[in-house]
Length: 451
Picture 1 (cartoon, one colour):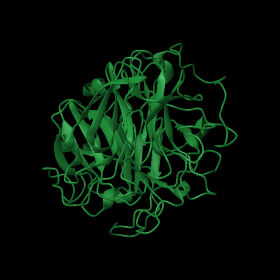
Picture 2 (picture 1 turned 135 degrees about the horizontal axis):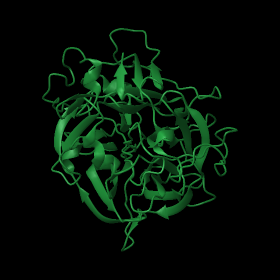
Picture 3 (picture 1 turned 180 degrees about the vertical axis):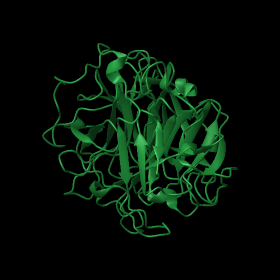
Picture 4 (picture 1 turned 60 degrees about the horizontal axis):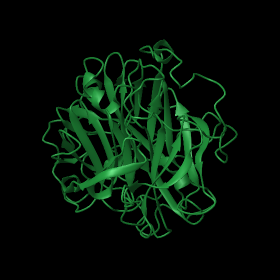
């Protein structure tokens, strides 16, 4: 996503339609990437990229889609997915104070408070594209407008769910500059993933240091630490070249949507940094991970404030020799890793790999969308399940960066970045977005989608 050799960060979430607000487990927050465009193989499936036509809507639900997905217990843990928040209701510019209203998030609310009935909460997604066939530079993506009538400005991040609310968090870009320096991480909340309320800046620019002035800060992803219940936001920082002084950093909060306190570098017990750019984070039962560019997995300590081991899985790089924008999630008993070729802000064909465990073995599977569609002109940043009473829909979020076809100066006005939200199609363990649904509906309570 940047003019560098780094990657993108997103979060995947796992949350049942009926879940106690104070559930003890944690949800996972995978992230995203753009796929390679240099000739990887397609998934060995009749519904894979390039196959004729898209399956019916029911095929987009994940494994065990005949009902609530029992197989997702691994990603979501024993409770709902965590989230981040805390934006200023007066505008994106400030940090919001303590939450003095609404449903408590300390477990005092019962399961009934978080229940979502089938048909009661339906998100509608419509892309303004009018041409056929849809080929680059189309589709243009959705320009979400928040409940204050302003464009949603949170990109390259993830979504986490607490109780019945989704919290989208990402990079906040200014309309008055073109350097993409760090200006803060913003948050929005929604009940249906389509209508967003501005919650303000959850982590502002710091007075100095890693996320201070004239620095890069990208790919925020939040998890709820399995052992402590604390919300932890991970991101990467770097100098203005994106290449020097790059590392994973973190911040913490006791609640999902309140201001986060910056803690600094994510270190090992010996003081080693995680020296990478694009990254994301997720939980899997009692375990928590940070995943980074080019296939690195950092297993986190029980308090989620440090890492205890690091290992690279080169298979997830596909045919590229390197990848960015890692998006990792679990569906049924299969783990998925979506990655992007390193083409900066320019769109490319995202690719994916699968494994029976986070520790592998990882197998490269091919492109997520038809070759040449450039992942419907987006770079993946998050995939997460919407689990309901009738099934589970895995929603893909990709960023349509400003100027993502520009070969000279892309990404100069990223406050104009739009959103590509699409339901993933499953065929066994193969995933795809074989056609672009210009308009589609998501029934949050049912866990189903329809054109």
